[in-house]
Length: 373
Image 1: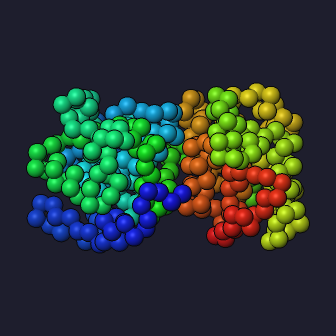
Image 2: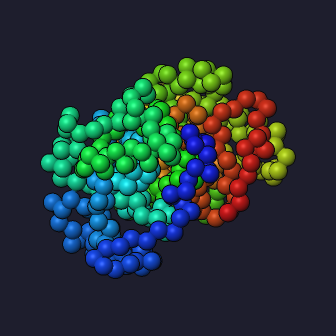
Image 3: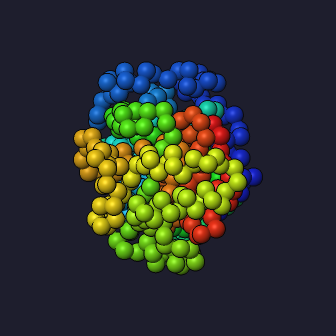
């Protein structure tokens, strides 16, 4: 998942110990001064400009960065957010977080993705959001626009920051398509972000209950079925990859897992059997015939608790994100989010096998590596 810039370009983020001066004090260990999580939110004025975990993290003196428009569904918004968060930090601005994202994810973790660097995020009142999205506000637009080119280099970002300061621009907009399609933040930041990407407390607790009831401490696998409105096969084809992983039936999944076992050297003989007996299915519910092939057991393979709308999708993400083995599709940004959550969070003990996002009849686990927690 290497982005536009390499690790050596990331000097502002993870490798500089920063200090912040506030009301005449220097806070070397910022987290030690954090207000209690529940208390902070209980006391928060909902009309306050910053619904944040840490009261001692003021808005950036350089102003705000906000998104213009949204491209796709909830997961696409997350992808836009983490790119935008990195850009906001590079420009010394507070990122205005889209409210749907803030309602499902624990965005307070985003302030602290590195222990010694502070990332400013905020959920703001409508009048502030409207001001940031005004046509009079400078905006990073398409690929040929000058400010867009500037954000792709360290020197360009510094120049843009200086220009905005010179013009005292409180707000800066950025088009969603710019951050979704045209760049991906550097690997060090991406890794730290996904290490701290968690849903809200209610979703985490529901996932905990389901996993404990269905799998206990036993390893399990997850399969992500994606049709993408029928475009998955075409997208995989453009990358010269098989479309077998787009929406595999139960039988196709078994064939893939057994084939991977047969072509892998560092797995025990019951690798396939242990996972095929414990499968969780996450799905966009667009291929009913494929879904039906996973309903051959009385308890099924799907989340069965109470949920509605996007919450159900978030539960799919979280349960699949904790799986020991994962089959998804490279064509789906949602699959890539799950794969990154598994790789970087690793919140269950034991062995995590890499996510299989493309497959052919010679695929082995050695093609991806094996992680031990």
